Image (cartoon, rainbow, N blue to C red; front, top):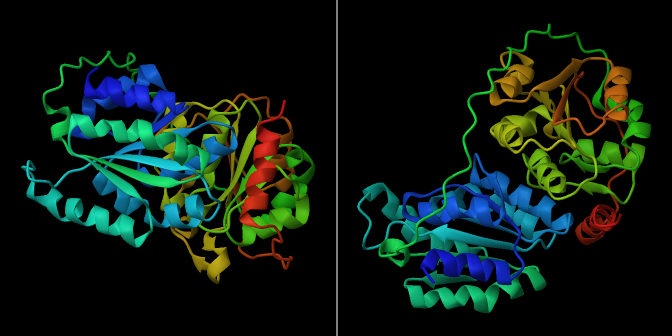
Length: 375
């Protein structure tokens, strides 16, 4: 078998079913082959892949990441506060740039530091310098999934250099969506985030929820605590990616209760959602123009940024913008898996005084897994 075929075979033997990937010039043939071998999510940024993989695991899938090693720098916090904190397995296959064969000087620094970063994070890793080293994949991947490990695989570009592999063609590309610009007037806020969550409590009951870090999660816990809620305890910016991973690997309705500060941190996830087209995903974006969990400092949406227009530009077709909690609740209650749907809820700043979340990370994860993986 060619190196690409051996890699795909090893992944399949370990039960992997989803790839979250960004291309590198050195492994582009493998990247192209993923689309016929696995459910493949085309990432916009490496960090969102960590969230998508976490959501996929809870829905019963075995995902892996394929990236260039430079992307590890974009993933450090999410790996620590999401994958590690909740014990999610995460195989990270990296094209290892900056080695002796490197012709681009800018790649050398990060290429040398990637092993040091993984050592500092207590992430075991393997250097795959030759075709013979590919046996490491078959020897270790099953353990990654079985033991909930994070493990890195550094592929020196020489592994692929003399391969005779001919990748299958990409799926036929679709043209730009050419969606009409979003032109609705920005409404005047009249209610706080807690009011939106409380109004939608009945509609959210019985669904898989991913609630944004900090005050939003505590407010959800107070209003509609249920085993199917994934309460984020870290990794700001990952609410929608986690929900996307759940939605792509489950037939159940998934709701991300996100915030403007979180979405501004990873806005390109909107493009990934638009490309993936999960019909069962609702993004309930409560936009109060502030970083509510750190003292209500203003975000860009308080004056210059319109996230409905941003989402439309990224390709989200169904958008409801409202300042009315009852209208937002009605949209959630009437959702018929005809999404993705973005509910842009315009709210006043401020947090409710509610209790802290009392569940451990593993309890949170297990409750969601049990919900998503049962009929």
